[in-house]
Amino acid sequence: MAELVGPRVYSCCNCRNHVSLHDDIISKSFQGRNGRAFLFSHAMNIIMGQKEDRQLMTGLHTVADIYCGDCREVLGWKYERAYEQSQKYKEGKYIFEKSKIVKENW
Image (cartoon, rainbow, N blue to C red):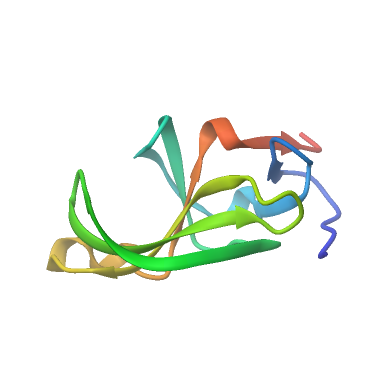
């Protein structure tokens, strides 16, 4: 597992496995399954599930759930494809649900 040193790291709420850097946040104004969610440009120490089409609040997307690479907790999803032109910026990006991650070294 990659171990990050320095401030502003996000970790899995269940096992504290490092999953992303604060500097990789693109937006904090997203909605997840269970409340607020953050859009990140990068993720680490995760496992991706099967790709599937989902009708989300912003239209149809192909997404894959993302799981903690250590404890397998569902943390959010990755946008694989956006079908609407205005949503293309999400492709290749990650949603982490705020309730599933915690700040480390802040």
